[in-house]
Amino acid sequence: MDCEDVLGKIIHYSMKTWREIKRETHGPANKTKHHHLDYDHLSDSAKQRIARLRLESDVDNLYSMRLDNKTRIIGLQDREFFIVKWFDSDHRFCPSTK
Image (cartoon, rainbow, N blue to C red; front, side):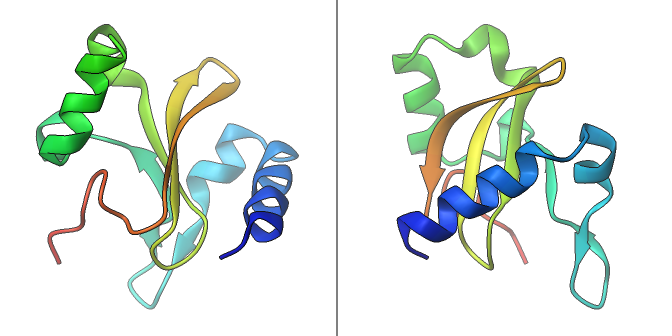
């Protein structure tokens, strides 16, 4: 996924409401594409980065937006805003267990 694709997806999502974003699914099992993240399931490097950026008090607002099969943007959901904090090209911030 190149920069143009990433920017295109971000612009696409910026035109949607949170309700629309949260309803998006993928695959035959209709898994949610975007969701809040559970701190306990984050990778060790993600937890270290959160500590380094002093975001421990914001972990309940961590949100993952799926851009493609592996690519995610991770940020903080703050009311109607999404504040991007990480670009996760390999789904390693909060890796799937399945």
